[in-house]
Image 1 (cartoon, rainbow, N blue to C red):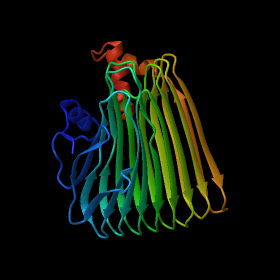
Image 2 (cartoon, one colour):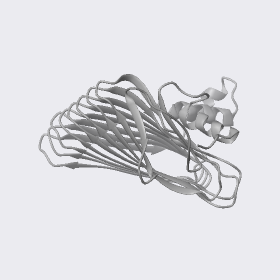
Image 3 (cartoon, one colour):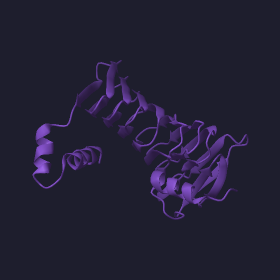
Length: 308
């Protein structure tokens, strides 16, 4: 088991809001190795036999427990793909905090690709938080390509918070979800790119069961010469409700492409999409400047509030 360095501890604090070892179940991964693990009576974490990732099994009826599984990279040139499977028992209510931080001070690209699969049993409730963060002054890029698959049984619910605010040069986020009868999925994405960063977010949610619902909302800011693409599709194959929305601020020479789409396979599917891209309104900046802020401070205040 590897020992965390101070840089790695800082990265964990950024992506998982952890400044000390958490209570409950956790699995820390650093530069491709295990850096800490704890299980509980209700939550078990086991390495896959081939070493490609971990299995997290949560017993039915587990309430008010959490799992932290942050990953950090501080070695330039390191590239890894990790497969993590979550088996969430019926009628449980848990919080899962993931995320990856990369500090790259070298000349080679560093990359982490995390493939997460969630099997959410009947009546279970899950809050999933995934944060991405990059730092380091090297020429090597910080690359993150997460894939999330969600399979939701009847009357289950899942809330996903996907955050990427700083330092990631390239990311391709793919999220696929399938919902049965009465299942509910809520996604809140917050994203900011700067420099020449590129970020692609793809969501495909299929509502198979009557009474199922999905609400996928992205808020983003593109600064400098960065590029973003939001590609979200909700498929209604039953008597269901679906909504997807992209709300973005464009600055400097940034580029934003919003592609929300709907596919109805049932006459009882109620689906809505929205997209809005615009710059910061001048009157907003003027109002804050009358309160004593300079123009830069006013912009930052508006952006922070928009992404909160």
